[in-house]
Length: 355
Length: 260
Image 1 (cartoon, each protein chain N blue to C red):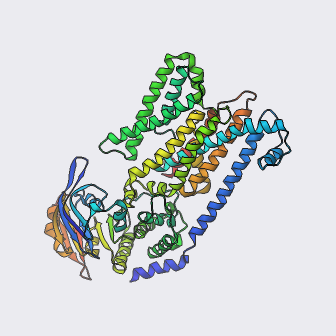
Image 2: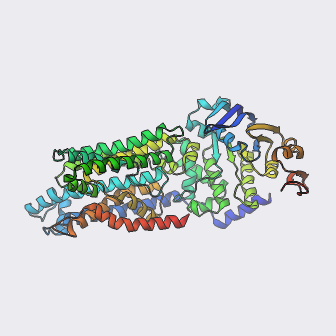
Image 3: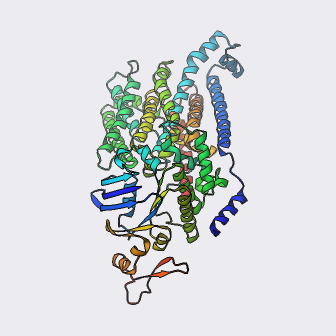
């Protein structure tokens, strides 16, 4: 056949298949190494930044069990700065990996972890606790925010599932929008009825990292770890889902169930992050996109790198929040939004131009 | 290979396929043709179990309903009408997604899956492009990648939903020749929804003409693609000619007095 010979000609022209799997593995190793080093540097800077000057060399020595630090310096690093750095890392990792998961599951580059009403739910939960005057009770605020965030996502799911056409990504998205508006309206109502507490409510909404030692870390850690494990295991699933419902189903996926696995894991991580840090915007949006742009890689690599780079990014943002107006402190949400909003515009321009 | 009896498909509240029966022999190519909105795609998606349907559909002697979605995807592969172009996947990664029905929920590919993907890439003549991003392929190359992904499912039935829409003549023939040669070499069964009647006649063993959700005619191309039948259902005058090799050619007649 004439045609077949033409195909063969093309084949010879371009040479035999390259071992693309090995190449992909090398790229994964290289980028993972870069991410780990970045995270390490961010942790050192995070432990270094503060009113009391402690040499970075001493800090690195202390991290590896050596010690030129005085007892006092050790106490500052271990008991004041380390919990905060770890918390920032956990929250950054949680928001970034959730954003990455939401973007794939909803096939929407502008999806962020707060998409399905978790932010509005957390805001309402926190506002209620603050207004009731029980916010100072141990873990009352994080617990209320956590439950509020999960409640918001649960409501969005419930709304999407009752529609006859239900449980498509569009109906879930619309459910999330409706729930978010509703809960935000409720939150505003409760807040306006109790204007004495505005300051505390805004402090939560603008995002802040708790400073009461390790409590918040222990609260967030199990959820964030669980979500990261599930989402790392779902990297392949995310790629299947990103082909759209019809094609994913034609490949044998249970689309609604598989999307639920991803969304629930991401929502748990988001709820945990919101509970301990309030609403920190843009992290879940910019980190996965920056990773995608820098590596050109698919979700297989982006999920893991988002965890590492997300942790590093928020640790560094927190350093800025603590030092720019020292001895005062800026809400960390202001820093991420100041960096995030221009970046967001850039992503919009690029994704708009590609279509 | 496929036995469909009295298949009814609804989209929303509207029934679009009203009791269509069709049997497809193993290793054959059946084309479903018909005017726009006749229910070709809906019928095809129902055969793949991707749209809920009433009636009975059996694949290789077993009812479709008794199969899990993974089992189904190991038996029947779909080349959709407008496949989603993934942004960051390489051609090799894209073809590997065809292994999904062979992997567990959180599983990842083993050596055999990679080997199979390499074989498939060679078959669809994209081995040279395995490291390239799918988004950078030309239309014809992308269609071949989609066929490759379907082949990686190792399914015995290939469903093509308008496989040539949006392709120029050369690429249309290239994709259909590829499918035809795979059918001959691997013995897969092909069911395609087609617009182009000349191409349907050229590649199909049998043609099923679907009109308004009902089977209007079914049989070898020469018995279905007759001028009187087509004029009745498409509402235009056509000539059915014979090419130099005896192949059927369907063309619209010159619009002498006929509505444009």
